Image 1 (spheres, helix red, strand yellow):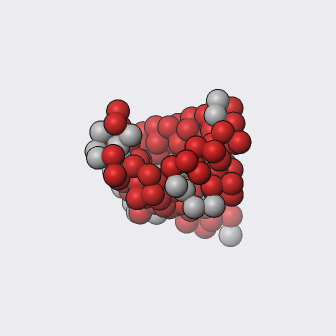
Image 2 (image 1 turned 90 degrees about the vertical axis):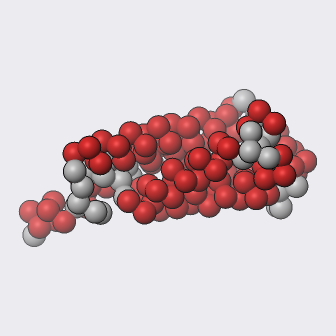
Length: 143
């Protein structure tokens, strides 16, 4: 984790929590509103490879990964996986529709990919379970 100023810690925490909330909401939507069967059919219609496998994996990643970002648990791992998830959505589904989400475009998935990548690179910041559990100062205090 990079040492940072209080304002950088606040900014990363806000980004992590908001992005986590959006990811978790989309994962929950795939389970509850669309259902996994409906998500599989939708993925297949959009041309996603292995839609029957991809739908439950993506739904679970977005729900669990979003919750992990909110809490700051295994943040870099989940952020990297979510960034890859959004890049897949961008290239497999949204790119041909242009930029605007209202037209099925990629603006939301690109923004979420960038947010997740930034979190993966920067880390969870001090206000996180990762920092509480794995920071060097905490580790030194335990040894």
